[in-house]
Image (cartoon, rainbow, N blue to C red; front, side, top):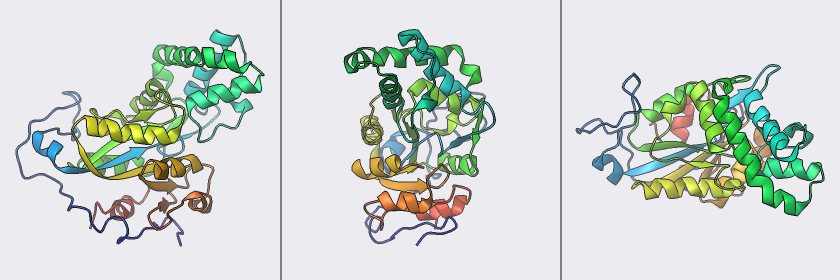
Length: 293
């Protein structure tokens, strides 16, 4: 059982045959840095790094890395939706007319338009235009992206530790449209902790979250990385299902509206699934991932 943030995992079921993980500090590297002003350790991409096996860690955004706070909760993202509905359909509405937790942006667009009884054919024809209008809004209002959101406890510490390793690839898998997701990460000061070569998977790519987890893996492989283990972190039922459907190990977090029991219930392979109250105990998380002895 899992209580008070203790991880559920079976050391012999999915990690017993994995290769030793190395934190490679013992060979020379040619660095590729995000910017000359960035003082923290950047990702180091080398021939040696590319040839060694990696652990791919993908993170959901809302409810997993960040939470909405205050009267302007998630204002930037919600306003982007409203702008899209208004520009394309002339609708004065918000996403709060439907249940949207754990959904992707394009599925939310579809649900809101269905709520307003827009004909299905018109939804199909205009859905991409609504998404494009959202990106337009996001581009013009980038500086507002951090309004009404904040990092969840332990996120910065965990991302910092993971970014210091040569055996890990860290990226996003989120239902957010890609520019909106990166705007949030930028404004909260954590974009530099994600691998610049592997773009991850976004609501811009597909409506179904399980496909996004697979897309992130494909992009890592296409960039020459040899991935031997995959973990997907998320706070909703859809994250757990998406991870398992795509062949990744789910890491469920009770940092959203679902409890650990709720998340555990939808996990098919409970021996492999990992579940935490939060990411606050960095060492506990790393040990469960077998990235810390």
